[in-house]
Length: 144
Image (cartoon, rainbow, N blue to C red; front, side, top):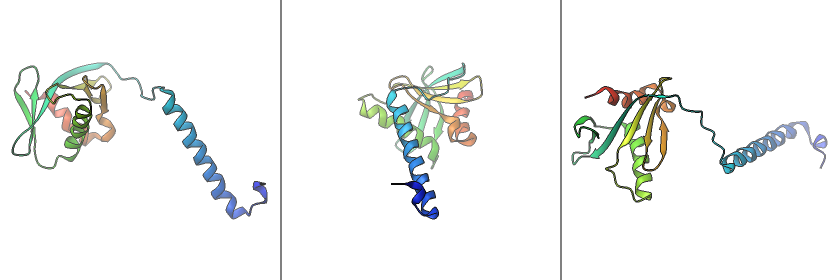
């Protein structure tokens, strides 16, 4: 089939479709190769181990793993915080890991925040969800 013989108005959608198929193919090859596509993390400047405990009233207690003291509570909607924690809980349940192992909240030298689960190696770069959402967790670093 000669692409030049196709009417000009039909050529553009065909070319765009071929380009998209090629892009999807390249992405699939990179993802299946196991190559890391993450930017290297800046050094950690602060770290706090936190345990998140569901409470009967629907809130989530944020407990400092070292001291055992509750430092915060997630109440109301708090959609981003609850959504992020739900992902960690789902990953742990799938692997048969209980909720008592702490998550690590890491502050990076470049100002980014990372939530890391040593039990599953799951990493969430919180700044990816915007500064307001990252700040929800950033407040937990300084609370006593």
